[in-house]
Length: 570
Image (tube, rainbow, N blue to C red; front, side):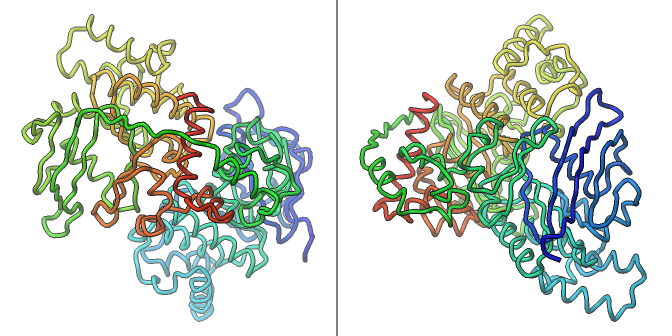
């Protein structure tokens, strides 16, 4: 029944047994049947804990003290099992792989019905219906682990929908998806919402990507409290996003730069609803008067790759005739679809894998005969997940490890470690255990452990993945600082914002080949490149086309330079 309250928090609080203070405090929320709700908040705000309360993981898996009332459907959560709640609310996890239990897509979708001993004929009919609904009916015999990121998420969604739940909860649905796949995921969620009328709750910090489709309300969580409950127009018009460290949509930032007052009357909650006649003149005027001379800052060549080919099995080529040149002091982005070969290039450059043919030159000299250890003193590689790189308990020991393996004296090690930790803002924590650090701080430890070897080139794989805007900004400002110290930086990324704000050049891969090597603005405004590399059209480009700017590439470049010089002072 429409407008019936299906989720009710009343004076609700929760405190984990391991915590000294409550994670959630005084939560009062009503969510009605058929609503589509976005829950946003910085890291540590309590939004994930709120999700765990909804699906029953709290209090049944994560123990603590719960006060107040929480009803999901007609169930008081503290009085019912996770199984009971799973018949009312289904959860699509951030990590789809962790949700799979079947050997095939069909088995996985059917799992809940098999568990309930459903009659085989009914089960087959239902699996077919639900798989068609999410576009996975052609993959029922495939292994879930062989699917693309988007297909995995569709399979997980079907597995939740098989029970015909009233509420679907999505926990960070965009976390592991490339831009185009993430866009499609939001569209699929919207299609499911429109066709089924189910209540949809999305927990996600990538606000602009979620606002690609309609949302009824946005709940902003900070420090365990609901600090705002607004529709998208109200939220984007307010100063709350900036105040609480949430990235506002790029088009909203561009509107502000052009002198437009952001208020509900211009419908700024979605790019598709924006009242263009009310903003067009200001945008055209700003674009006409913003002039920046693009200075060619290319220095001497530091790394060149020529006719590089690579195959893991000797049969299927992963990299095909790769050619590019990197100059000293550059900060560039390497982008492309999942499986395009981005991380493989990094592994070959570092010597973890051996190229089939081709040459890699550093300062004009081949590095083919250098060992991994020797290459590490030229090219440092920082993996996406810092926990996969860390092997010591203490910060000092982790950063010192590479030097100790090279038999450097402890006196010299101390000076080098202290210097690296100072650069990374970690010197006060030198003697701390790594377990006491946040995810972002651990990331800095892994960077310090590479910097201590004094590499000339730093390769970072998804440096901002999973970071909220505050921590994203901290990491990127830090990388800008070390780049200004002369270290050349290559970033493998799916983050369109990162490309726009911090890099001037992008190398684009698709199916193991370089399909573009151009300025960021050119890449982000070329429809063919965007489609081939599974990128997503940035809302700046959409805005430029919507107001009929003659040269959208120039408009995007103006935005980049204005933000870099006027806002960040770079």
